[in-house]
Image 1 (cartoon, rainbow over the protein chains, first blue to last red):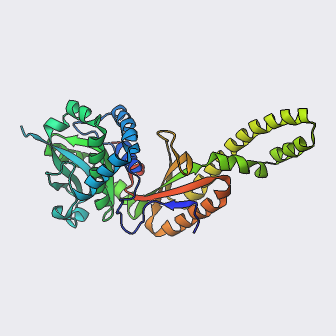
Image 2 (image 1 turned 180 degrees about the vertical axis):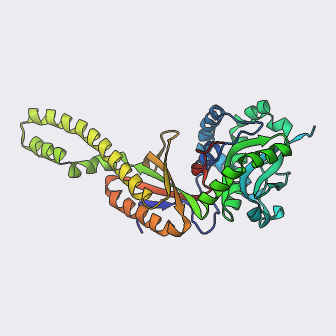
Image 3 (image 1 turned 90 degrees about the vertical axis):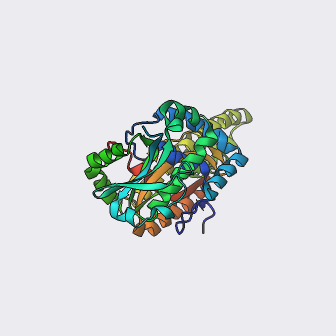
Length: 73
Length: 270
């Protein structure tokens, strides 16, 4: 097995405790089908949010807090 | 007028939705609400109620500036969509699709039903895999001389030149190294894209949101591939092969997934 290859998540179970938080936030916030709902968040808003999230996620403690909430609640 | 609006996570087929009882579903975006399916004919939207007070346009914009608030809700959105995607062909919606009335969702399902059905059919049995390409600059620069004939030649000449000439040539070598390294990375990234594309149904090159420097080096490219479940072994083998081939040049590949197909639904008219 090559050491230069990291598979972050296993395909068996989509249990993603070890999944990069930023990677996930990028998917949820920046991608996915956009249907015009009655209340919408503009893309510009999301870009701004993402800047904040970068800062947030770089704090390991806060990132864990978020992940824990995700798991238990 | 109700104090609640409807937050929509994803769209699936009604038959598939019926196999996923609401009671067994994960936590909703606001944890005290329940997830429910709103179904019209063959299609069902997974929704939960959210307080209008929090999710009105102005209030939502305020909350979004709170990164922790947003991150927790984005993760809940993801958990819900993943739960469904693992069990059914599903169209993941982007974070923050909110309808004021149940009837608005019913109307949307009615109007876009055909388009949704086509997308679901197209995505059946397929998953999204992400590939990130990193490059360790120091490793690349030190390996570049051995793969570049021009550089090798120059280095040899510099060794035989007079001290004064050698100094000038050394400067030239450093500049050339940087150029050659850039060309090499872009060639390797293109090769990775092309070879993995051949093992996938579709490929997307994603924008890099910020320069990420990690223990693996700098993030050089980010791809999403739509891969058939039955073809994943080959896809992964190809990726591993590429990782081995380019390891010496300081290049690392990172495979992430399987994801709900976030990157393969957004081009369609919403």
